[in-house]
Image 1 (cartoon, rainbow, N blue to C red):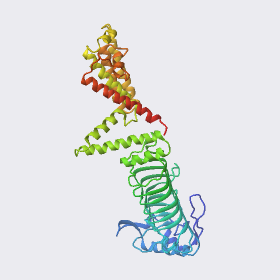
Image 2 (image 1 turned 90 degrees about the vertical axis):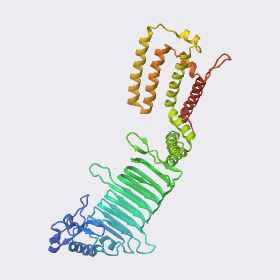
Image 3 (image 1 turned 180 degrees about the horizontal axis):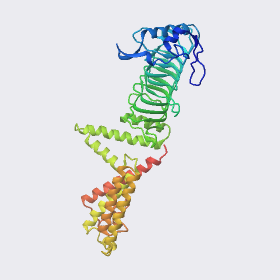
Image 4 (image 1 turned 90 degrees about the horizontal axis):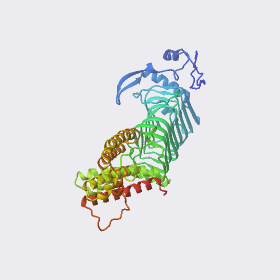
Length: 487
């Protein structure tokens, strides 16, 4: 006789069962019985109705099944399974776990430190109105799928496990918790989570997981928290309803978010939902409706600064829609207005852009005014300098262009750097051409409080410049207001 000395992750003995020579001949392990022994060499690749699969030898599978049922198939209220390695054979229409969880007396299932060599499905609708109180899964390993179908469970908790695909469908829960583990010494990952056509009456909490895909399709949740998640490929919330809360805390999603077909509650937190957690950039969105919903959520929380960021994204998405329309010959003027609005101030979000546009247009207008001579004879006489200063002014302008452009390109966004480069270049040209180091021409051009007398005249181009500058000053004021206002 041999004694099974299988232990869980914490080092606690989980079996201590005696087994005979016949069982040893199958396990080839004197310290682990047929339930707890490693079964890697029990499986060989075979063609099945679902394609090629690693299938367990039929004789060994039946011996494992018989031993498992003899030990666990009783009418206890609590089923505890620890450290068992479950072989896989889809050809035999009999599953070990399915045969022991159909008891109408069962109230709780606890599965820990187990390994599954194939897909495992939990189907708990055998009895009408049957509802399991607790189902806890801890530290299991499956390179395939763990499926819950048509289940009624008050509390489902899946923690600290390595699972290829976790699928939940047509099921009802009071509370649902799914978590991995980011510890360096004990890293755990659930690669894909699919929850379809299910209902969570109280709390749903999904946290600390590296995910390829998280799909919540046609679900109904009361309160949902997504925390410390890295989602690489897909976050789907289509046709889902979140009744009271949907909160994102420290969630990074690399693709574009789509909330167009998602019903969101008034109380939702998107502050820590980002496309880059290190830079804390706003989440990329697929469409205007998604940006609008996130903006509305921040407005409900009186977080105007974050709301403004998504307002700008909403306007950009509207501009994209109009860009598609003009290809069809529609909404051309709407597109033009949106384009000008975006270029001049990033849709009233960037006061720096608006200020740079004022400076650029002001310099161009001043150079045009200077070229007319007759319009500014008095001013030109006052600012005329010795021509020996041209060389030094040119050097100063060149230094400004190089230093400011390099600094802006390194620190600020690319479009801002372009505006600064244009401004610096125009500034050098302006100083070199006019010698106006006190910017008398420039200030008279952009001054919104300039009083025109009856002797002053404007041509069409000068009038156009004044209209543009007035519009840009308005955009500058609105942009500052947008970033400092209280609701």
